[in-house]
Image 1 (cartoon, rainbow, N blue to C red):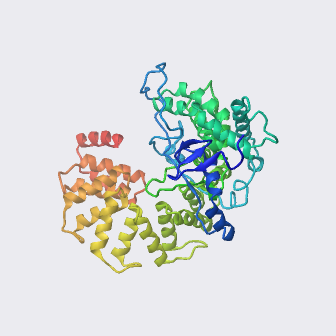
Image 2: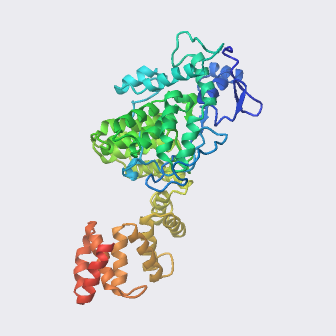
Image 3: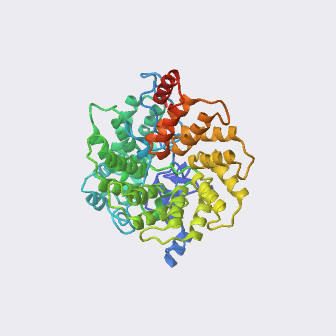
Length: 522
C-alpha cells in the first residue's frame, strides 16, 4: 500500500489525483479533497500561525431530486440499463426539499438550534460514537460497516489484505474507501435509473452503494436516496423505520467546518448536500408527525439545527420562525432574532428581512433600531427579495427611517408586486385607484387587486369586490363581487360581511344562484 502522502495529490489544473486517477474536485471524494489541501505547505504554515486566517474550504452543493413518484417512467421499466456517464455525484435540477406524501411548504423549511451543534460539540470534531450517542441512536454504525465493507471488497493479492486497528477514521481505511468509490458503479447506476423514473429498479443499486460506500465517498447520498424511495413506497411494505434510520445516517455524516462547508448561493438557497437535505427531511418528519412518528417539536428543532450546522444556510430561518411565533415551543423573540441574524450574516435574504422586521418595531429582548432595519432591508434587496422591496417602499412613502420619496416608493412597490408580493400588489392597486403618485387608473387598479385576490390576500379581495360591485374599472359583476367578499369574510376581513349584505340586497335570484356557484369555485 502506498504511504500516507502518496495516494492523493493535486494537479497543476486543480484536479485531484487518487492513486493516479484524475478527477475534478467536485467529483472527488470529500476525504481526498481535504487530504490534499490540508497538506499544502502554505495552507498549513498560515494555519499554524493563525488558525482563523484562512476561510473554510467550500464543498459543492446540488439541487434536491424530488420528482413526482406517481408519474409514468421516462424509460419503460425493464429496459436495458442506461449507459453511465463520467460523473458519480452529478445531481440534476430538482425542486424544493419535499417528502413523499408530506406538506412540501413545511418540508422545505429549515432552522438551527443554538448550542446543539456548536464547534467542539457533538457533530464538529466528534467521533461517530459521540454523534450517535448525542441522538441516542446507532445510525452511524451503518457508515462504519460500509467503510469496512469497501476494504473487504477492495482487498486482493498484495493489496490491503490486512489493515491493523481498522477504524472509520484511520488514514489507511479512508484511502481504501476513496479507492473503492472510484471503482463503484452502483451509485451512478442508481442515479441514472432514478432520473429515468425507474424507481423500483434504482432502489437495489442505492442499497448496495449504501452498504459499500462510506459517507465521505457517496454513502450519504446513497442512504438519502434509499430513504426517499422507501418513503415513496418502493420498499417491501411499510419500511418507514428503515428509511428514517437511513436519513439519520446521512444527516450525521462527519462534518468539519474548515473542510466541509458547502457552497451557498443566495439566489438558490435550496441548494444542499445529502447531509443537509436528510437533516431537513427529519426535521419535517418530526414536526408534522409523518410516517408513524409522533409530533416532537424538540426533536424537529434538533434536526433543523443539524441542517444548519452542516452548512445549509436556509436552515437558520425555520427555527427563528418556530421561536418567534411560538410554534409548539414557548415564544422566544430573542432566540429567534439570534437565528435570523445567523442566516442574515450568511446572505440569506429571507433571514435578512426577518432581522429587519424585528429591528423595525423591536420585541422582547430586541430593541428597535430603525437604521439597522433599513440596512438589512437593503441587503435583502440586493437579492431582489420582494418583501424587502415592500418594506423599503413603505419606509420611503412614510418617511420612516429614510427621506420621503414617492417616486422611489412607487418604484419599489412595483418591483415587489412584479416579484409576487401580495401586499405590494394591494398597495400599487390602491395607488392607481386613488391616483396617488400616479394618474388615476381604476382598470389597472382592478387588475392588481385581482392578482392579490388570487393569491389569497383579504384586502385585495375586498378592494377587488368593491370595484366589481360598483362597475369601476370594468363591467359590474355583483355575483363575483359577493363571492370574493365571502372568501374575504372567511379570512377575517371585518368589513366583508357588511359589504356582502349590501351587495346581496342588490342581486336577483339568478345572480344569487351564480354567486353561490362562484364562491364554491374560489
